[in-house]
Length: 457
Image 1 (tube, rainbow, N blue to C red):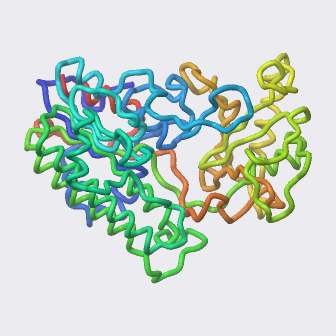
Image 2: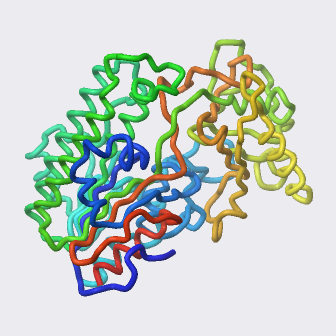
Image 3: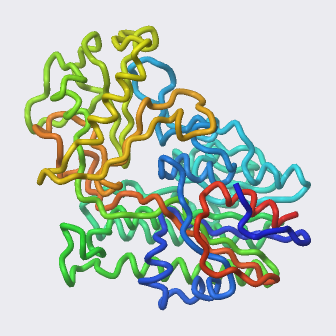
């Protein structure tokens, strides 16, 4: 962990505008001429790519960024995590999973005030020295989604149907999805601006989730390399236009924050086109790792949670998503475990090597990466997967359902989705009292928290 600024100067205020899933290539290159605010910050600041956490997923990436703790220390390996070693459904990793301090906790301990708006993994809202509006996993406006609780009334006066997310971003109705994202963005910007103007703060952060939803919903309209791209399509400029809107709002935030404020624009991960999915449980079944009493017929897609699994003959199963999580069925650990603990490492290595060799539909090498949590994290808390998998440099997602009839698919089993994540996000740091270093290399997500705290004194 290093600071991106060097030695600290006198106490300052810090404004963070988080762009979930923002692409360094689009901001620094392709769209740069149309983003005057970000271009101005770059010209006088320090900027570059930012290596995300592993996994490079919104949860846990934002919490890793703001605590400077890796996912193993956090004990959070994705949106859903195992609560125990049973085979039951996983549970959502809400704010109660986070047992370490995040930036606003340190800010409060120093007697300073924070305003936190729409940051992932902040529901239920934790108490802070300041004001907090929880993020996109909030169940709805009927819940207690602010700290202090009375702040909720203020938010609903500004936006009576305040949206924490779009209703379903994996939708085939793109016109409706675009309108939902626009409406959500308008409401969240209105509330964030109000908080910036009316609440005392030394540290302010607002995270925009709309950009992530734009990428997943519209990337195939934007990227000529995507297999579904068509020149001159109706939504070809939708992503570009959304970046321009974010740039304009960044300018508004900066003007309200004041000339002496340190500004950080940052993303938790990047974006890549999605070429298809690797049906991981289908592959495990066909290769003798997963045993099914009654395999689902071809075309009848079945969630792994609903499959008729013979656990007494199963060595491994998996969960799908933008990356894959593989679990071994270990004797003495799982209820019907079969893998002897004394050969656990050998079996895991065999499975990791076999998964890495899975090829694509044209027998192409996918450049798959397989991770062992104990080897990549400082420590491992809660219940990690035994293996984590990035298929095809994240151009292929992991598909968890069964019934595909083969080990790959071009249809996402959870709904239309055109993009996956990428390992590198981006950052732009601008300190009006200090010349920037221009483009820099080699920084990672967990450099951000110490940088913020150092600037604040």
